[in-house]
Amino acid sequence: MARLLDQILIIDIEATCWDGPTPSDQEGEIIEIGLATLDIATLKPLEKRSILIKPERSTVSPFCTQLTTLTQKQVDQGISFGAACDLLKKDYHARSRTWASYGDYDRRQFVRQCEARQVANPFGPSHINIKNLFALVYRLSREVGMAQALKHLDIPLEGTHHRGIDDAWNIAHILARLLSDCRMPGTEADML
Ligand code: AMP
Ligand code: MG
Image (cartoon, rainbow, N blue to C red):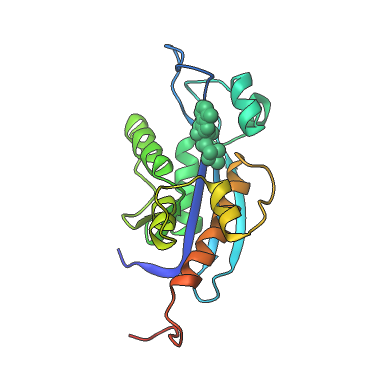
């Protein structure tokens, strides 16, 4: 499949979680896919979106609501995981575009849940781990969390930390700065 290099899809998921081990009759499931798009020509974040997903094998614990602000009632209005994967492919060309997340958790959770549900992974093979790239580009001695990365760049944290939509939007701003700092002066599009 031809690669699309017009935008990067920034993905930040929230999942059901507990204060301690996962209850034996439940499993961690994605309840929100936060998505932001980053325009590669201008390095401007363009769109942000929250896709809520109704969990099928777990419920939203009080701890999870405290962390994410998401409630069972909210995610009950969500779509199925399969429908969300279809939407990513159809509306965002997720299989052909580069996608990025802060750390490797989001990518691994997609692999896990797609396998468990026998759903094709909506994403293509080109994934950027921004947490790792950030530490390498800015020569840090260890990887840092999203909030600390924003602080490092003097970018304000917008919205609610641990809401997928806001995390994705903030991460898009981190990636925009990072790419801007990495770009060679004097290079324009269509150099090939
Ligand atoms: P984040 O993108 O940092 O909001 O985290 C994504 C998901 O990781 C959350 O929706 C939780 O399922 C899980 N998670 C993050 N932080 C914690 C925590 N302190 N305790 C348990 N689970 C967490
Ligand atoms: Mg998040």
